[in-house]
Picture 1 (cartoon, helix red, strand yellow):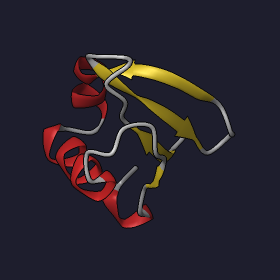
Picture 2 (cartoon, helix red, strand yellow; picture 1 turned 180 degrees about the horizontal axis):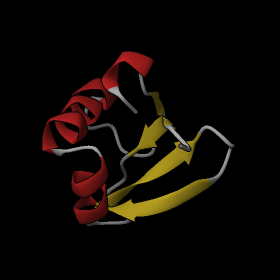
Picture 3 (tube, helix red, strand yellow; picture 1 turned 90 degrees about the vertical axis):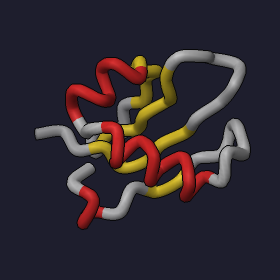
Picture 4 (spheres, one colour; picture 1 turned 45 degrees about the vertical axis):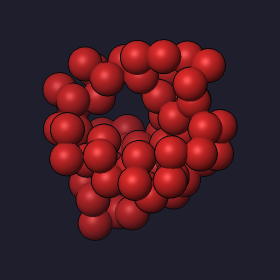
Length: 66
């Protein structure tokens, strides 16, 4: 399993967020795909953690099941 380690929401790419995985890969993923993989509560936690400041990476806590 390639866990999510960092999350980055930006208004420039509407409809999803940039995701960094444990292997160092980064890609934009849609909200639909993230909801399927992680669930809406997980997305909401990442957005709160980021503070809705676009373009900033936040670290996903291992306890969140990233």
